[in-house]
Length: 121
Ligand code: FES
Image 1 (cartoon, rainbow, N blue to C red):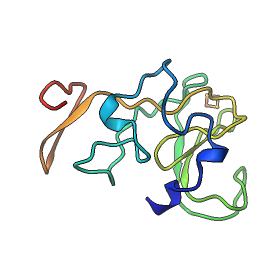
Image 2: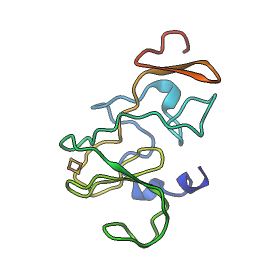
Image 3: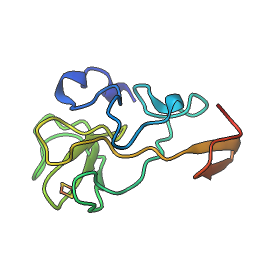
């Protein structure tokens, strides 16, 4: 999570303010996650460009198709969009928006409900 800090200038929508795929209020933070578990990211695995499936690229550093100072995140192999570990899209990429955060809620520490968030604000 420490890698999320300091990326804002490289991101198209660092504060999740765009509305095409509205981010729930409880995920409008740096980690784009509920405060109960900020270390757990819940996003829809569909690129906001043309709908391909971004893949995880958790290894840091230089590697094909990624910048030399890569800090880990997601890569869409279709047209090269890159996202940080919170699913925030980098600037000047084909994808116009961050990965979508669906409605979700923790029913307990070990149970996650995806698709509904009415039990928690
Ligand atoms: S579908 Fe992901 S970059 Fe085009």
